[in-house]
Amino acid sequence: MKIIVAIVVFSIIILFHELGHFLLAKANGIRVNEFCLGLGPTIFGVRKGETKYAVKLFPIGGACVMEGEDEESADDRSFGKKSVWARISVVIAGPFFNFLMAFVFSFILLCNIGYDLPVLSGVSEGFPASEAGLMAGDTIVKLGNTRIHFYRDIRTYAQFHPGETVPVVYERDGERYQTELTPLYDEEYGIYLYGFLGSTERTTGNVFENVKYSFYEVKYWISATLGSLKALVTGQVSMNEMGGPVAIVGMIGEGYEQSVSLGFLALFLQMLYITIFLSANLGVMNLLPIPALDGGRLLFLLLEVIRGKRIDPDKEGMVHFVGLLLLFALMIFVLFNDVRRIL
Image (cartoon, rainbow, N blue to C red; front, side, top):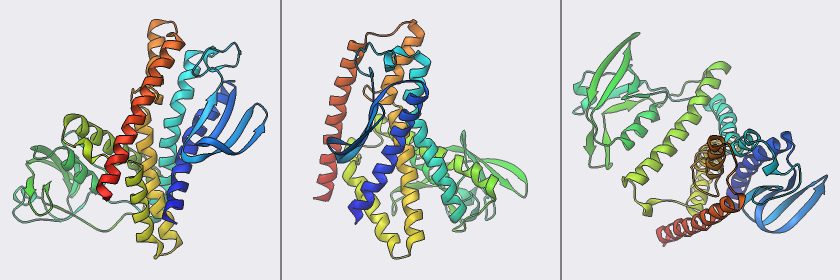
């Protein structure tokens, strides 16, 4: 059952991503030859108009196959015949739809369970927060240049800025104050701590507040993904710690096991939470300027805007092909890491 739930979650995220490409392609008059979920041989397909809609054997991806996307085409409705801005809108629509999905699901989630405001329930004795005079009821407003919207923003900031002295802006009785804190390393948990204690209570706002905090929720996951990538590039996180499909399926399975006994609503909300994280993550990853990804295609289109003419499609196609091979190599590497951790 866990595997089925994981496949459903993956499929929804990928389908929505490809739907973004599909809708913008249709809106710009681009011929879409195939819209499919999964990869490999077709197990079910139906043609409606010019487009074949299909389900493939391996549920690990999807595609919106447009005429002339990776090769020259004489068709006036091919991808390459459209204006550069039309093509940019089609490419960027996939990641945008991932962020849109994350926002809509966040709104549903927050309407049900509320959000964790950065209000302190207390401070730990012997830690910097206590020594600086912070107390229960204080609201953390900023850490460094980062605006704090949720209590978990604090943990994430500490994770990506280990041991750094940070300016802290906090609010007490409607007044704002500023201090500096240098987190202490906690041997028991293996992390740096300021000594803040958060409340377990969650705030449920009205519709407008939930819309606002849904934006913050998506922003949180985008920032967390970018922070993880930066940590990977700087060596703060090892390549061996990267997780792939097996790790994600394990995470979904763990969430399923924790919530299934609590009822359908708890299971539904847990899957929403995981989908928000994965969808925002996919949106960010697809915007990276890596060949074969949407970000790589977007980079070529922006170069076209700067140069005033299109880069040779054959050369661009070769770059994307090489990028695709490298991505497959990376997938094999992270899959090996997943299996190694299990064994």
